[in-house]
Image (tube, rainbow, N blue to C red; front, side, top):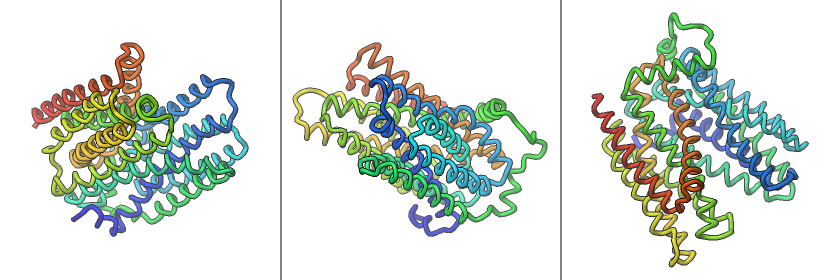
Length: 421
């Protein structure tokens, strides 16, 4: 079955819409807030603005450290469909509150609500992948994951660009408020259409003898403990986390790349972001086609080497002697290769994570993966500071470091992965 045929199935389409609309709304709200800080709320200095932007980024990712483990435990113990519906209803309430806060320019409340949006996303994260093996046969999982990854990156792109569009209007606040509320309501309506899991599937996740209550730290510790009992899971999660490390490293530097080598026009950042996001979507769909719907790691290492080569290629293009058009085209080409290879790389890994574990701990394993992903993304920022600010390497040299470490890290993890078989 081709990936797109899954969109005709009632057991997949509503879930697909919920996931896509949620990712879009997260990024619309987050980027509206960033633009709100920069252009609407008066701040004392550029340093204040930078501080608030970094605070916003931190507040959104912090809940993934705190709540992911508990979210996985909850999803493994209780009805996943009911949890999704309640989370989407919570999103409607949060977005209504955010709209009121935006209208009255209550920055403190907006930051608090951003944290709660991150929390809502952290609780949805484990369910996002854990529910698929319970509603689809194994031979359709790779295609389903390809669609989910494609939609996630397209939704991130659309949400980000939509924020820029609505904030450009004279009545920007009104449009922004309407946008986040409409997306939240549409997500809630889509969640209502997700069919309940069959009783036999629901019975698989009843953890008899498990504690009825568990603290956040204990839940995270328990989730991480599960993956350390199976090294194949651990190395798979490390590979997935490296993908997010690399993606965060590259995308964070796009504004600097554009300003230093292309143009003072921020529209170029949007163009390159669109190129990369669409490329990951294409690569995700291509992964299902190349692997013929089967969960295998045949293309993981070649895809990693392509990503590494694309990163190293930046050192040749980011320099003098090239006109603006040539710089833009070559940079776009490298980001296209990086994105397509990334999509081919990531989809089999996520699918393996779903199929390798039993239903009663699947969401906890995915929760542990989310914790590792968040850690790797934070580390990517620290590494960038060390290489670019402390060691003072050029941006091209920074990309070379990313490329070489990607090749070595993936080669090491896959060697360990195969050794576990």
